[in-house]
Length: 421
Image: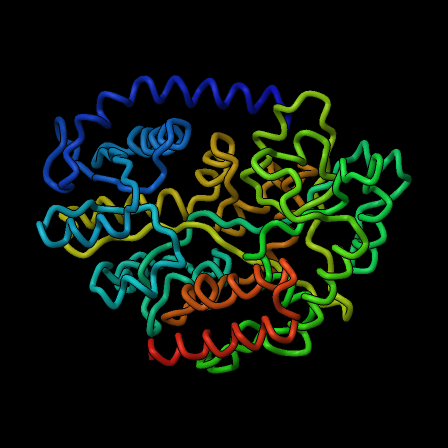
């Protein structure tokens, strides 16, 4: 994507934001009812609350409003949108449609928060095969569908082209190459690390690394953890080898964007990083798909959002019309990408030349073919947050060995899963 195009999009977004501030502030969060003139009001909630994000969603809502004459969608930002939705259900004042973190579906469906859209999909003959299967699966509970996938992401490998050219190295494709290249692009002055070859700051990417090693996070029936395995130990041993090689140091570049500053040669990040990096003068960077593991296995995590209809919505028909327009018409997903940077969950849209002919986006599209979402079993989020990540932190600080860390996480994780069955 050319920088000039991004700047133009940002300017357009800002203009939309200025026009939309009044209507957003004045919007009635209750949803439903008749809007101005003959348009039926559709209230749209989401957790995107900063000015740029609000402007992006208002611009997309405005595009839908201009595309037809029956409905008028208004975006109302809501921090902690899932929790606020439960509160709104008590008062009966829920929105009509919600920008939804797909991972939350399995947690909130049992609370009665969402409406199944199976009948709507069948009635309108919506082909769900047009979406990435992993993304669609996150919106299912007990074989019922509760939303349509909207946006997808993954973490791919960013590298500094200038540094790589100076070192005479190419982007790595596997673990061995990753370590070798990282060693060659690491810079120390007077024994002090001044440019890290690679970053291991985000321990939440463990599942992707585990996939590259050929392992899985849970067993076949999702009743127990499976990361305390030879593959899991292999991941942590590889991490240790990177630290021992001096290409990474805990806390290096903390609080700043070391990659943007040229102090980090290589690291994993998502498509949301592209807009900011494109603004950095003199930064020449590339993006390649996540590297393969020792046996050639590929692994990456998939995240992203969907659109759902909450139980008690007053204008389900309007919400459904908006959902279909945005998710099933590829051109609308591409148009939103041009103002937001997000990749559509619609496969045809994601394979538009806008992405495939862009050297940065194309790596993310490649990774989407093998990226996997987090397990949707109840309690899994706590397995990662309360059991695995703390154990990995203890491992990285040298308090636990690889075997000890994974054993501790397994015991705690299995208990969490048992308590949630």
